[in-house]
Image (cartoon, rainbow, N blue to C red; front, side, top):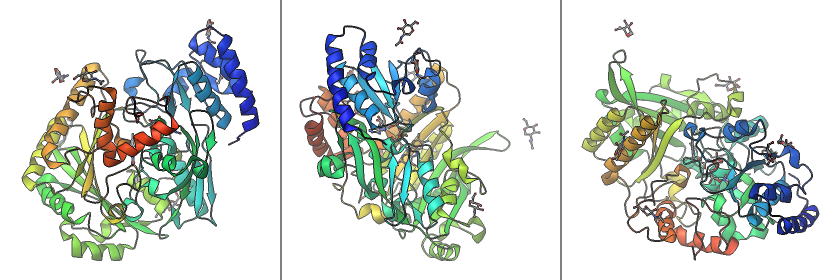
Length: 524
Ligand SMILES: Cc1cc2nc3c(=O)[nH]c(=O)nc-3n(C[C@H](O)[C@H](O)[C@H](O)COP(=O)(O)OP(=O)(O)OC[C@H]3O[C@@H](n4cnc5c(N)ncnc54)[C@H](O)[C@@H]3O)c2cc1C
Ligand SMILES: *[C@@H]1O[C@H](CO)[C@@H](O)[C@H](O)[C@H]1NC(C)=O
Ligand SMILES: *[C@@H]1O[C@H](CO)[C@@H](O)[C@H](O)[C@H]1NC(C)=O
Ligand SMILES: *[C@@H]1O[C@H](CO)[C@@H](O)[C@H](O)[C@H]1NC(C)=O
Ligand SMILES: *[C@@H]1O[C@H](CO)[C@@H](O)[C@H](O)[C@H]1NC(C)=O
Ligand SMILES: *[C@@H]1O[C@H](CO)[C@@H](O)[C@H](O)[C@H]1NC(C)=O
Ligand SMILES: *[C@@H]1O[C@H](CO)[C@@H](O)[C@H](O)[C@H]1NC(C)=O
């Protein structure tokens, strides 16, 4: 990434001049303002460009937004260096255009590429380098780099280093890390943000800061408070973590009519207390049996152990014999291969699969935190409801370990000690008709309602990276925009919301960086 601040200062002055004398459309004013930057023609796509739709859709996981009726950006700025990011901020601000910042495009509500006010997309996919420093055991990664690219590059350099982050390879560093970021190494090393030691950000005035010059408050806020409320993150510095050269993985499936409920019940008691090296995710799915004539719930127990199969089997036979784990269920492999396994790829899949782009579809995601075990009888009613919906599955991610050693106020992500596990609900379906979308979203909402007695309350906590437009909306106390923000803010951040508002008010007092669920300023 090039940072040319002299050029930029000259640019800013020119741009302010040009907008002052112009009376054209906001887009033409924006382009005019931006055009003082030398490489503009390779960077800006307007609807006139033949590849506009291709660029718009390439990092868009929701097919429902790939329609003619979805509001389109005035332009997409596919920034190639810091000066393009600076110019986008300055020119959008001076023309009253909102920006949507997109890195991997996996936002559950599409907030990185859809808006109902005039907007441009600042697309970060071209700013994607990954630079590993073996001596320091660190890496500088740009926002537009995908997790797969980061994992792949780490593994090319070392078989004993890794980074704790998400399971899906096509997630972008920009959104994923600024929302917390978790994966199978969470019980051992915490979240991604617990292992981020520096960052480069462009603020609302186009200034570029690193950790030292942005200060600890802002550096705190962008590690879990969501980046897009505060500025544009260009890159992150990661502290890499140690893994054995071989780790052990498994994925064993138990059907509910063969006693899976008892195993899940016991899992709730033991999984958050197991040694940090062992992570066992529970994934209940609806599957067809009897040649497609019957739906049942099948639970996958997907495990990752930083150690040998022998030690794993010993540990399980002592702490969790109900799982019935056998030697033949276990596979030893380097950490990098395990990232493919964890995402359901068959053993032997070439590592290049890590570099694949996202796949669009229809889905609705939500999250919950569980603080006391769900009774067996309730588990049975949960499975029954899942079967009704057919397309919803869950991922239950055990907490404890490193997660409970870190204070809730250490980062904006507040869900630390006291949680047994987090639930992610994921409803995904094929038919994109309006009726089908409404029916599936209805089902997700009724499922979420059914779960109320078993999950956290006051507030009912939620994970920012599993953004959900439902929370906060239609709340009885939504008398002001700030009250709405307080509702989703308390769910995502609990007591940290207040500090986030303070940081926001300091770094972006005019609230330029805003979207449906951004951090408000004090006077919003
Ligand atoms: C299939 C799938 C699997 C997932 N698996 C996991 C998982 O294992 N673990 C986990 O923690 N999460 C997971 N998530 C959630 C994911 O972490 C979030 O959706 C995350 O926000 C995605 O980041 P992104 O850059 O891909 O998305 P984007 O849609 O590009 O961005 C998400 C948000 O971050 C903002 N943003 C993006 N880039 C920047 C930037 N450079 N500066 C400032 N703000 C920025 C956007 O404006 C938007 O508000 C998953 C999501 C999906 C769809
Ligand atoms: C978009 O079209 C304009 C005008 O035709 C052109 O100058 C510009 O280079 C195109 N942008 C890209 C990224 O190709
Ligand atoms: C797009 O094309 C139309 C028709 O050629 C033209 O009038 C308009 O100015 C163009 N817009 C931009 C932003 O280039
Ligand atoms: C399973 O279903 C298919 C298609 O409906 C049918 O052809 C086949 O005979 C069935 N098999 C069994 C074992 O019932
Ligand atoms: C891990 O992946 C590499 C590269 O694809 C492959 O050569 C190796 O056989 C894999 N190892 C295991 C145990 O899967
Ligand atoms: C979805 O739920 C709403 C409100 O309960 C209801 O009016 C609507 O008919 C439902 N839609 C579908 C397709 O089931
Ligand atoms: C508050 O909720 C009502 C519906 O209950 C909705 O119409 C309104 O837009 C909401 N207000 C805000 C500020 O979100």
